[in-house]
Length: 161
Image (tube, rainbow, N blue to C red; front, side):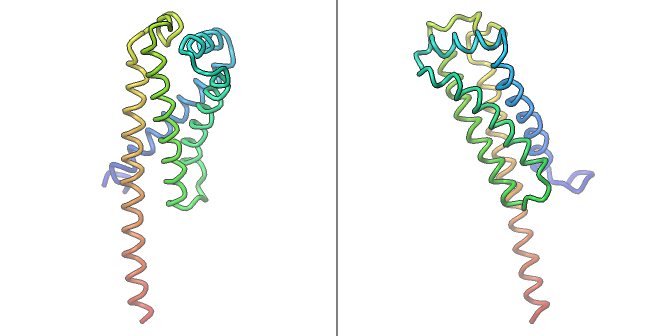
């Protein structure tokens, strides 16, 4: 436990949820405006993905970011539901980053249309790793909370008897 009485996995889950939530929402939103709009369109078209992937990619990134943020902002959400929201965001992130890696690896996609002009999929791989770390931390956090709730339930049963 750290100073705030939180486990390390809880701290990691919180920080990564905030970071990935802001990052994904911001990048999805920015893709509606130039120059990101043009870059993203070139990426999708040159990757031979369907035209519908342009809107799906933007909205998907914004939805993923929103889910990450909701998992931390929606205080009245029970712990198990909060973990499910965060894990759904992690799953969406993994799918999006796998598509991004595919796009980066397509020889027709020019480096000028990619983030920072970097052709190797360094950024998507880094974000993918962060998403997997976040999922593991949320999973650990949920399991710890479930174990605590189970112990409390057993104690309460003994008190009732």
